[in-house]
Image 1 (tube, helix red, strand yellow):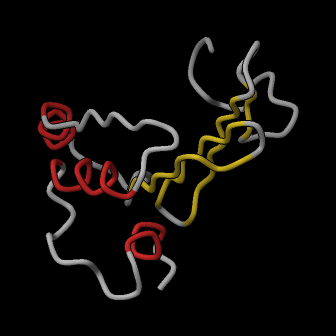
Image 2 (tube, helix red, strand yellow):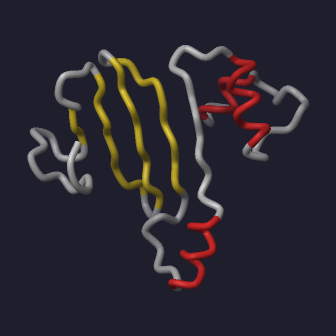
Length: 110
C-alpha cells in the first residue's frame, strides 16, 4: 500500500484490498471517531476506534501523544487469553471477567 488512505484508487471509498492478499482495510468516521477495520477473506479480524480523531488538537498535545503511541501486536486467531494479555499490557482491561463475557465487552456489544 502506498501513501495515505484517502480514497484514491479505491473502488469503494473507505475500502482498500491489499494487492496480492486476501486482506482488506476499511475505514470510516462516526462523528469525531475514526473506525479502522481489517478483513481477511471477507471476515472481520480486527477493529479499532480512535476516539476524537477528528477533533482539533494543539501540536504540543499531538507531540505528547506521539511519544506514547501504542504499538499493538495482534495475531489473527489468537484466543481469549492472548487478547486479555494484550489489553492488560495496554492498561485497558481489569483482571476480573467483565459482565456479559469478554468478547461482548471487547466489541462493545453489551
